[in-house]
Structures are given as C-alpha cells and as structure tokens.
Image (cartoon, rainbow, N blue to C red; front, side):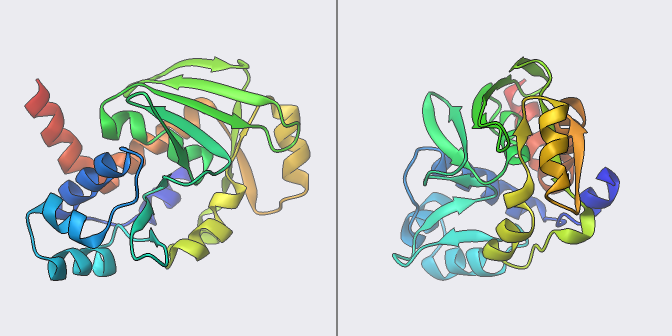
Length: 217
C-alpha cells in the first residue's frame, strides 16, 4: 500500500525541486508569499513565477483571494489541526504525515503537536532528519487513506479526500475506534509513517535533498 501511495506522487524535474524547497523555506518564515516576492526569490519575472504556481507538478498551492501563497506542500501559515515548530517559528500543517516530511526537507529537528481526534489527547513528537527522536505518548500510531482515495488534482480535493483523514493517535485502541467511523483508512505504526515520509521526499525532492546534503558536507 505504501509503495502504491508513493507511485501516485508526482515526478518533479530537478529545477522545480529546487524551486519547491526555496518556496518552503520562504513560507516557513511565517508569512504568505506574493507572486512578485516569489519571482524575486527565484530570480525570474512574474510571468515565470505565475507559470510555476499554475503548472508545476508540485501543485496544489493554497492561493487566497489576495493572490498570495498561504500554503504549499502541506505547510501553512494559517492554523490547522497540526502544529509544528521549525527554526523556532510556529507553523501549521495540513495532515499528520506532512509533519514528518519537513525534518529532512529543512535539515532541521522539528517539534510537532497535534491532538488525537478521538480522545483529544495532545500528541507530541520530536523528529530529526533521520529518526523519530521522541514521542509522547510512546504508543502513537497514524491513520492513512488508501491509495485510490487521494485526489491530487487540486488543493481542496486533496485536503477533502486525504488530509482530513490523516491523524496521529495516542494509542492503537483510539485509532481503531476512529477507524470504524472512517472507512477507506488504514493504521500505520509511527515508524511506517516516517518511512513513507522519507520515501515521499526521495521521490519528489530526491535530487535536491541529495544536492543540499552534499553541499552541507
């Protein structure tokens, strides 16, 4: 199932991978990003920046009425159910598994806080680029949608079909109670969810992650 989910993720050219990582780092500053700001960040004109937002395989973006990017690749400057702390700044994320992408993509340890949707218990995790460093409570598990359920064609469709069903649970018993009410979902161990996140990064951003790792060393 995890392999099938990974196959459904987009294949992204190296230059778009670089642009996507730059955009994530800029969005992590906590403010929405306008097209002119994106163009300046990329060293291109506004037409090229608009084309990237419109046509890139990394879509969907969250574009609000002000024309600015408020969310991208799961990261949001607006509150959601899932909170993360990256480089000391509080941000929000569309779904539980998205939170596990960012330690590797940012090369930073990330702090995660999100409530169990069944018990409302707070789950806290500390995740480095290579491992789960800490999890409280210790028995956290993760819900995931089945591969054919997720619709990647637009941000609203992706969030409605997938993100709204991907959570951290404080125990398997809690996850199983919730799963009974949400057909089409499965439960993963925290280690399986982290492995999926690493696989997703390798498929979507692999060349850029490798380039940045080589540069840092």
